Amino acid sequence: MRKRVDHEVRRRISQTIVALWVFLPVQTWAGEWTEKVKFSGFASGDVRFDIEDYRGLTPGDGYTFSMNRNDLDLRLEIAPADRVNVVIDTRLRYFGFNKADDLVTLPARDRVDPFDVRLDEAFVGVRGFVWKNMDLKVGRMAQQWGAADMFNPTDNLNARDFTDPLDYTAKVPNQMIEIDLYPADWLSLTAVWVPVFKPSQLPASAALGFAVERDRNGCLLRAPVPPLRDRDDAEALSDLFSATDPCALNFANTSVRTVYPDNGLGDSQAALRAKVKAGDLDLSLSYCYGRFTFPIAYDAYADVAPSATRPGTMDVTYAAEVMYPRMQVAGLDMSYSAPWLFDIGFVGEIALIFPEEVVFGLRVPAGGGRFAKGISTVNVPSDPFIKATAGVDYTFTRWLYMNAMYVRGFFDEFNDLYGIHNYVVLTAEMKFFEDELHLRLSGILNADDMSSVVYPQATWVVVPSVELVLGAFVFGGDTSPSDPLDYAAREKFGQKAAGRSVAFLKTKVTW
Image: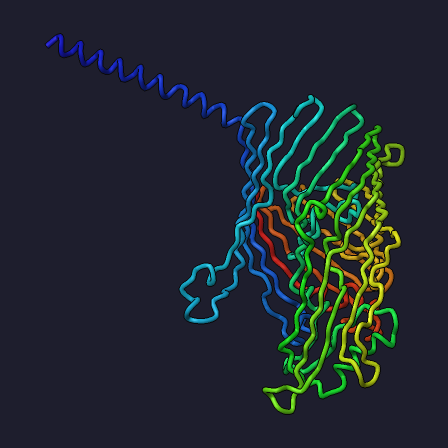
């Protein structure tokens, strides 16, 4: 009996030793990795309602919910070794509108409740790569260059994501290699190579910039205005469409084709930057070789012919092509906080852009009136031009902050026939009740055509990390160009391509 007890005791002791031998390293490993892993993210909801109906593709189609979106953003940062950092940032987005349009697609969950998965960042960083003062990053990234708030003409490596017109800071991530050198405490050098070009994402309303506009009955409202310098040439397209009954036109063959650059080595992009810090002054010099990420018109064909299938009507053929011209950008940006002047903040950026010349061609039927084949003009000259931002900001008290900027050249302006416009951007923010309530009013005024955007919003911090935002994004300006034949006569924020004014309600939980 005693032997049986001793054997049982020895067995349990052996099991305990084995368990400790396995379990303790696991606990140690778990404890180590808890310190090496950082998990963060947010969940948000966004509901928007169109508060007017005279913009958009079809007049009178408004006063509806235009967004019912939910996002789940998950960010993971891992430090598997002392000098290595891995970042993965993903986003699950539900669009909130049913896309099932028949019984065949109704069983598909991704049509009834459409969603997509986005990988915003996925890169590996190595500190002290080759040399102790040299860092390397490789992977999917979004660069942020420049000193000003949002309007950064020196920031050209990542394309913009304008699918949400309320978020001017969003970017299209891209694969790239970044090397950072720190030869001195006051100096940093950065080199970035981007192998493959990616264009900016545009809002759905952007297509109206090149579209044939129709009313609710399908009748012609307005033909697209071609970027032609000679007025006689500009009248060709207008005369072509106005030569018949606007309600007898069939628009089955209208399209806009995008011509992308090849993925060869010569089409890759590269940039260099030197950043100097001297006390309260930050100064950067930069150079970028790449492409403009917004489409530029360079070709179009238009024709109206009797319909073979619908007697008494005319078939419209309208095909436009857009492209992304090369550019070189020499940039200078600075930020300075003046301790001798109430700590007012000053920012400034200037970009000298050397563009590729873009020649626009319009082809219309030969013979009869002024119509001729091969009408062409220089849309973007090769002459260098400047885009710039200058601003000041000041915190008057702990509850009042103001920011004012002058901006020359909006994101999508590239000195084509539309030109480079001048803007005034103002922001005021007030905080109340121990920062639980934020009232913010922003506005953008185009000083050339006086069109505008007004962006008021109120943020209530319900509890820490939980906020509720109510606001509006309102465009001001004329939807019709002052001169129907002048490509530059469109008002920046008045034209229908800018989108509709909306009211919105957002919720966000951050961890």
